[in-house]
Structure formats: structure tokens, C-alpha cells
Image (tube, rainbow, N blue to C red; front, side, top):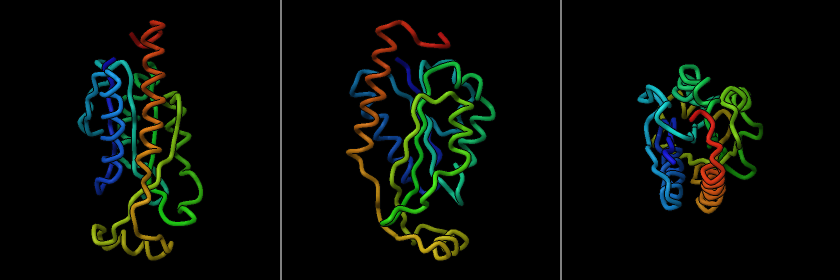
Length: 172
């Protein structure tokens, strides 16, 4: 299957998660394109889509929300998965799922929504970001679990194979 993996990431940490997802899907035999959300003109050429986003100030990244605004109906017409990252520290912050995650998931008819830990490197942050991190007392460090990412991407690959085998790829 031709799969689009598109990830909105400000500092690259979430993009690295998306690259790992793409690699697992490629290893499972899928043709995977990794494209920045702002560069996705259409999803018509893809059989399935994986959307990813970092969370900033309690919301999914603007680039991902804008992609969903542009392509929501087409995304809902094909198998789509959604992941987000950004929780850092012990216990993980933010504790709650961002409000717009479920809204986006409904708009694209996401088959699954998952959250992965994030990475916070203060030296990469701008002044406003550092102020926000200080205000919520977020812990710096890398809280991503790539074994967890691999397991989820493996489940996506299995679901794609089942859809392919059954001939039930929506939108095609």
C-alpha cells in the first residue's frame, strides 16, 4: 500500500517518531512517503495516512490542524491513524489529552489515536517556550519510548495488510 506519514514537529523530536513509524511500515512492505504537513497538497495518491503532531500550549501543531482543514474529507475516506507526542517528566505532563486531539480524530475518522512521550531540550527553546516550560515546571529530558512506537507502528502495518488482503481499502 502507498502510505503517507506526515508529522508536524517544531524541534524535530516528533518528526523522529514519525520517521520510526515510516521505517516500520517500509519494513512491512509498504510504499511510504514522508511529507511535511504544509507540503501535502492532496492525499488522493495515498491508500492510507499516518498523521503525527507535537503538542504546543495544549494543542496539536497548527500545520497538522491546517492539513486536516484542507484535506479532512479525503482523510476520512481512507484508513488514517493519529499520534501525538509531548508528554514529559514523571508523572508525565500534560496530564490531560489536548482538547483538539479528539476533534481531529473525529474529522479524519482515525482508526487509532495514541500518545507518545516527548523530548524537552531547553537549549532548543525560544524565549516564550522557555517561559511556558518554567511556568508549568516541565522536566527536561527524552521521554520517548521507541519500543512503544515500533509496537504501535507494527499494529498499523498489520491492519494495513489485513485491509489490503480483504480488498477493503476505502477511498479506492
